[in-house]
Length: 116
Ligand SMILES: [Zn+2]
Image (cartoon, rainbow, N blue to C red; front, top):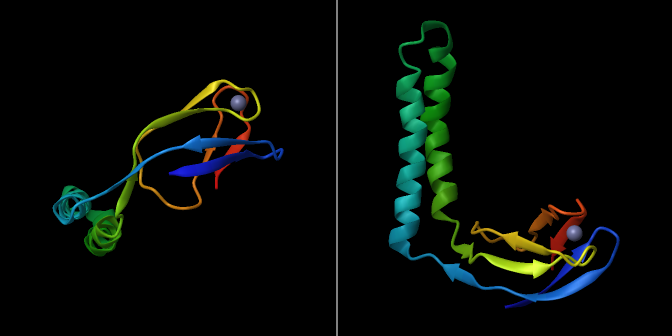
C-alpha cells in the first residue's frame, strides 16, 4: 500500500507498507485474552476490602468493552522502515493495530510524523 509520511513542518516522503487482515479466529482469541486480563484484575483485587467495591465492578464491565474493542480491530500493520522526511534517518514502525490516522515521533529528530 502506498502512502505519504508528513512531518509536522510539512516535508513528506513516499513510503510503502502492508497490512494484515486478522482472521475471525485471531480476533476471537484477542477478544478472549482482553476479557481474561480484565476479569483477572477484577478477581485479583477481590480480597482488597476498601477498593474492591470500585475495581471489581469496573473491571468486570470493562472486560466486555475491551473484548468488544479487540474483536473489532481487524487489521494490523506489518513492521516497516522508512526514511524520516526531516533527518533522512531510518524510522522503524513496529507491528500494531492499523487505523487511518496513525502518527509517530521520529526517534532521531523528535519531529511528529503522520501517515496519510
Ligand atoms: Zn527524523
